Amino acid sequence: MMKKPTPIRSNHIRNAARGQACTLQIVGVCNGDWSTTVLAHLPDESHGIARKADDLSACFACDACHSVIDGRMKWPPMEREHKDWYLRRAQMRTWRELFGMGVITIKGAA
Image (tube, rainbow, N blue to C red; front, side, top):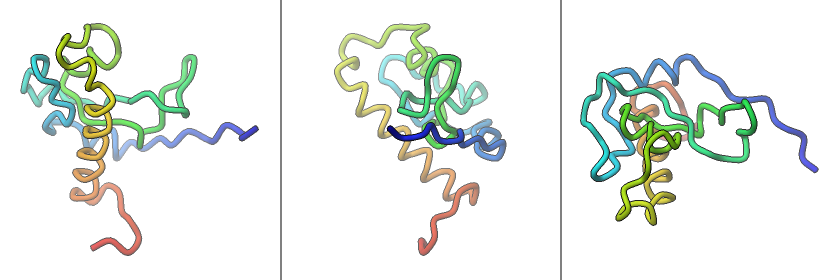
């Protein structure tokens, strides 16, 4: 059995979300109000009871989209079946933004 890893936390990543475009952009939900954007944690193996996922397992989310992925609001019926696609797309969009901002680096990448 694998030992639980130390959580990856970064104030730089969390702070980078402020004012950014929502990378989830769930159709019929996203409010387009980037002033409400925060770093929203996505479900993965690093989260558990009273423990958020790592800051790398996250995306930039407006308040409305964040409410959907946290279960405070329901997924729109036509988009529910695409949930995994939305989460993966948002995570990749967020990593690209963080890379472009210089918040994260990748060895050997231009």
